[in-house]
Image (cartoon, rainbow, N blue to C red; front, side):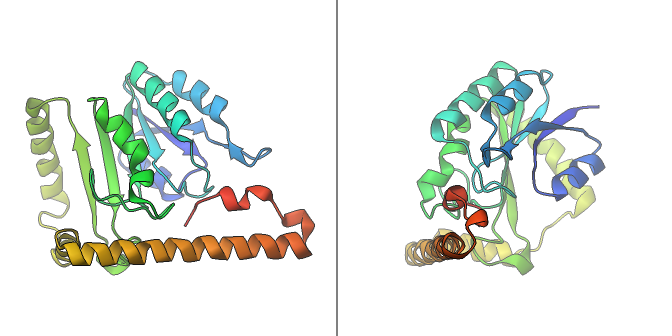
Length: 237
């Protein structure tokens, strides 16, 4: 049975999804409750001990549920250990958009900033998987629209992967609904709509950050025990 490593903690449904897929689920350390930050040493140690060929789930930005993300330099160290151990990175991008150009920016409001981690792995020429949702960044919850991007080492590998994906898809849903996909395609391919979307997206992120700042200030003023300086460093939308 193939092993998949997920962060501890992570989105609650990850465990269900991968168990039902027949994978053996293991955890790697991620959040340090004492520092309320990333347990980076523990993360590297656990990934370094993972068996070659294991899958590792990485949340590219706005980590759910902690809101704690690695820095750019830390992502580079993660990439190096993932590649040196021949692990297969599987990015869960619930807060990002279309690979590789149109990243969502839902964490910071900056499209390029939120794309850094994934682009770093893609640029090294090795393989990775990227699962993305359009529900949050385009307000299409009812459409459940998303993509799975599989980066392969060669065209030959890509052809083989595509044939297997089509085999699986045929048994699952055959042809997906087109309405949500058409909306996303229209926005991304129309310069005026794309500009409006990025502006509205930035406004939404700014509103979230402003509410967090107000909450932090209110807690700091009234309930000192709950006022934590790192509240404003968390980026979970």
